[in-house]
Image 1 (cartoon, rainbow, N blue to C red):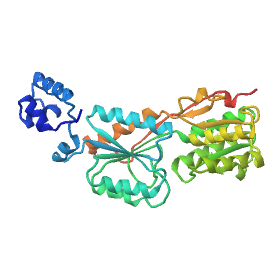
Image 2: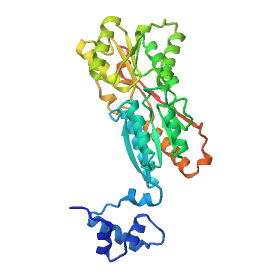
Image 3: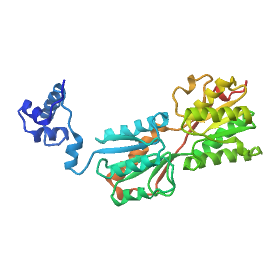
Image 4: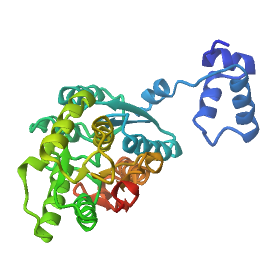
Length: 337
């Protein structure tokens, strides 16, 4: 069935378009009976209200933009779920933009959003460049911004993060206590805030147990599965670590694939642990030991912060930082045989 416009719906109800419009905005001057009658007829005739157009007249888009590095990562899909839950409760919609870790895309998205497309932005950054001054344009145009997970340290705005240093320290310490002495650390971007904190946790855990740091065990990976396969196979064949700690989810998968191809047994010959919000981690063979971030809660907290900025900006400290705790979940990939 083709959708109809508001004039056609109003005609079918023998009501004015303004009355129908007020019903969809939940105005108090519309009786419950009239509103129910309008909503029922709208459902029957497949009418979809154009919130964007009506909100433009009120100088509000009633839309929140969510910018993330990727959509395939379970962490981001769960965080988006948390954001959407809060936005929906406030009568807002969300627009999702994926940068694919491309700085130019990130800049393009931000500039596109200056046209009133969104009332605020919740963002996990790409981290591909040092020049973040374009984000300062947001404050000049009064467009609120909240960072989550991946942040730019030189931009002052509220943020929601996790205890990355402590989590990395605990993960590395767990591998050491399981008998690993040659632990590789896999990272995609060491210059990101989370990359720095996770790296430091790894280094400090090694130092605590008097395990010498080896530069060759810190491995720079990419966003390409094919390239990562070659990088990891070279690591496993030439350096021969007995433990691997992956700083992002996709590198744990890449490690499993490389081990399968090389017939390296996990955890007999190599123990693996990684940051991951993957719900099927217990079903992998072997089940994957993870540092699991409270992704949905992060999204909820970020959305709540943004709506505080929209509703009462004077009450929000631009330096506000909410830190949530991740959880180390031990499974078979780090189990002593």
